[in-house]
Image (tube, rainbow, N blue to C red; front, side, top):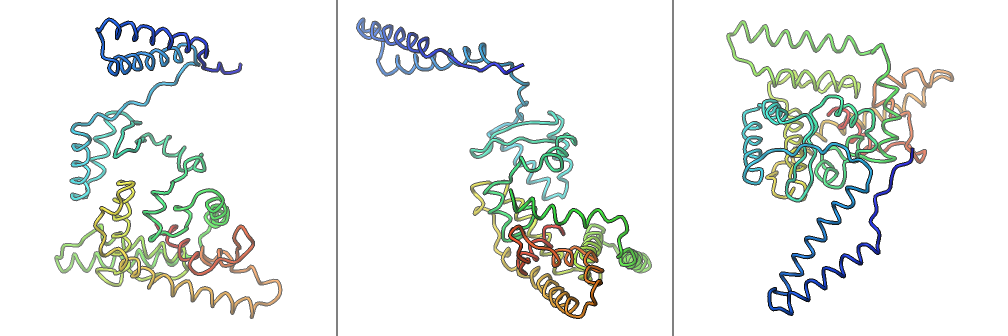
Length: 335
């Protein structure tokens, strides 16, 4: 069944406009109406009348997305969010909003926002139909210093290519670095046992953050950054800081410069001081391996980790990836 096209006859609109103008002139002639105010009122009447005509003649509409209920131009929601972030309890803030509905819409500083809390909706956006939800210029601007042109800050062909390249690596059922993960787990137990014996209070969130970074870098880079070796890892601190700043920037859309981020460039530099040597060492290692490889053994280690996998791949133009691109890729998958 073909969809019915919503339209209003041009001749009908012309006739209505003519009648409205004649009525307005008659009122002015009798001295009973101000010309400007009459025209404004008649224009409003015409606008709403045409809207009703289109609604009647057009196809059935879907159910409207409920509007987020706020007060004082969203100041209540904004204050609650800032307080939740300061208290480290954003989940409670999200749960509070979701009580109004699992899909909501609102306007904020000139932008229409849709809030999706339904798991199936999130899956639709992030997994099943991600290509149809481009991140856009504001997102790219906010995250570029941190994530560069990596997959989570890319759209279109660049996103497709990185996804196609990375997907086989994450489908490997047997992870060769399982022993590495076991080492990190034992290290966490050792830190906990030491704190218990000394009667010390330990920051569990910081500990698990450092553990996650170590296991992830071992899996992605083939080289653990040993964040668990120090109570306050410089890399982890910079990683968490840049995420928070970028999160604030994207929420302010066109007003990203209002976010205080004096330390941001130095924090990115701190991360690069860890990542770039890993990338350079991997590139040098692959060059030596290819030069020394016996025929038939070229691909034996190409899936050891994601970095090696990308070093043995090419971009959409058939060219090898440069070191900056590899850095961006690693940062994105680490995030």
